Length: 75
Image (tube, rainbow, N blue to C red; front, side, top):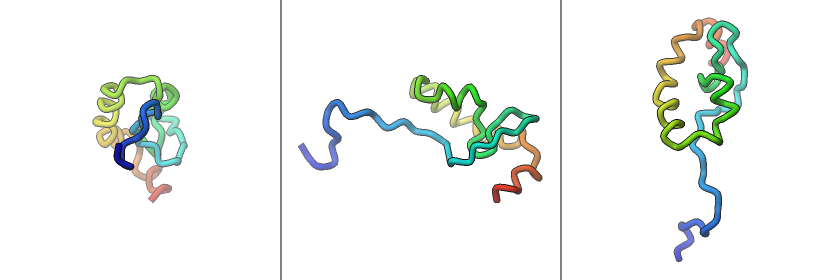
């Protein structure tokens, strides 16, 4: 076994768009850091890899649901 192979039984890493900027936009209901809905953030670890990938594919488009002047606060 090489050093790069994780030992069996180790938890699998979960992909996440979280950037630790957890501020919810009241108009869209989306997090202004990752563009997920609160229910998606809360249930992220319970979603399947496929469900997470589907949501992550939508995130760039969701950004347009938040007014640009609000997003300007985050650079």
